[in-house]
Amino acid sequence: MMTQLRTQMKWIFVVLTVAFLGTIIFSWGMGGFKDRGEAGMIGEIDGHKITPEDFNDIVRFETEKAEQQSEEDLDEQKRKKIREDAWNNEIERILKLNDARKLGVKVSKYEIAHYVENYPPQEVQDAEVFQRDGRFDPSAYREYLQTSQAVPYLIRIEPQIRSFLFDQKLNFHVMQSADVSIEEVRDEYISQAVTGKLRFIPIVNDHFEVDSSEVAEEMLRRYYKLFANRFKKYPQARFAFVKFKTVPTAEDSQDVEHDAEELLKDIANGVDFSELAQNYSEDKTTSRGGGDLGWISRGSMSNDFMDAALEAQAGDIVGPVLTRKGYHVISIEDRRVEDGDDEVKAKHILLKIGPSADTRDQVYTDSYNFAQDVEEADFLTVADEYGYSVDTTESFSEAGYIKGIGRMRMAAEFCFNNTVGAVSGVYPVPEGYVVFKIVEITEEGLKPFEDARTTIYRSISKILQKNKAWDKAAELADRIETVEDMERVADEAGFMVYVTEDSLKPTGKLPADLKRDKEFLQQAFRLEAGSDPEIVQTKLGCYITYIENKSAWNEEEFLIFHSSIYQSLISRKRDQTVRNWIRELRIAADINDYRYMHFRDF
Image (cartoon, rainbow, N blue to C red):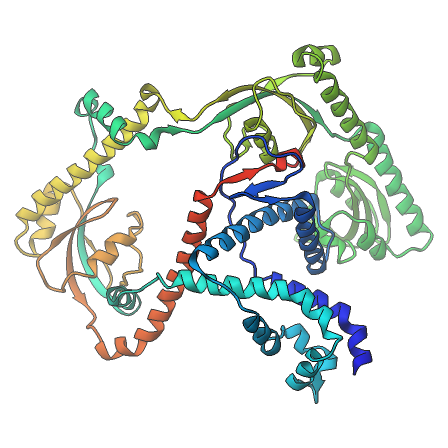
């Protein structure tokens, strides 16, 4: 048994590490970016320094795990996402540890030992060395834990188990603040089990117009002062840039055409077409099926493709055929006429035309040389000497989305951690590379009143519309003495009466010509059936509402489902509580992000 254990130890280590680290919760990157960081640091989280070595270890582990789980090689976008997730996960881990110390949450060595002994991962339970008669044998596993061979295993997994248990205890501690009232359980039961029939007159806010004379200057300025936080202007930056595009050259196109001709030679020499398609075709939707397109006719593929395919005979190999997607090698397997249209049964191999490695290297070299030159000379002057076009971005925030370029987080961090006039190195963008110079940085402040005037006017107009809707609803409600009056009063005032089906639920839908208003249905079902019409007000407007009938409250059924409804609601509330807690930790944290000094990924 020990020999078997030794041979499988490396595998067990990998399985356990992946299993336990996989429990770390992913988050949704928040937090600010501060001043220039200490040289060599990836970042600082509430004073905790993250070194490049530590960060690269985390990224390497997550990359290896992703590669094991993926059937295909990871592209650059997926690798960037792994780095971003690693950063966010590390922030969350550190903030949780800090908060746990304040809350007094700890994990003892006895708890770790208990977990190791009693809760091995499923992959370990499935290991042959721990099987007896096809089932996991806990005694064999515990026997192994008592041997010296288990020491490296325990040393390796102890930090992961400690982190896992710590996370569980901390989340449990935070979840205790979540609670669900009997009213919430009752409302949830009503939404699932109760049906009814409504008669109502909708008086929506948008029905009422607001004249500019109703919104006085004093109202606008008072709103601006009372709600100043709504007009907060976050730091903005702009930069001038030169873009170096990696586009395929004529030589690149010729190389791809040559590759297609080589495939034709291979096919002529007897190499299986389907095998070549699986290995070389860049049409991902058909390559796994050997390039099979099935029966195709005009309209199925591009005109250039179909012209070549329809001129061929069954058994022909056609190509290279150039389309906007690239070069195609086409195998015609059969022909037929279907409903008067010529069709062919075909396979194809697609070779896309893209910039070669040499082309990309040359473009990068050009951008790098330009970046070196502008370090010692004027940006515009050097660009003019090279004949490069210089563009300027619109203002952008620390979030990093730059109109006309896309998302460039690292470039944005560079701008907000440097001064006007600073020149970047080479930064990648989807089309190639950019080199830029910071031309403007505006500090945080309030948007000027005149710039906010239009927004304030709209906000006040909505308030006035809401008031007008309520006044009109109150006027009509005063004229309705019985439910029979609803039709007459609504018709006289130019409104409509809507009547729903008997089976309407609080989670149901209003008639198609009305906007969805979940809040209205929830409030309406709280009314008593047969009582006088009442006004229900929501964000969208007012509803003069009468409940014609409502299914009887089933107290016995409610008691039966009370427990399951409660468990569902408390689970949701606990999850939300944990998410809110983590979000608040990140907002309050002092997060210094220096990744822009190490990575150029946007």
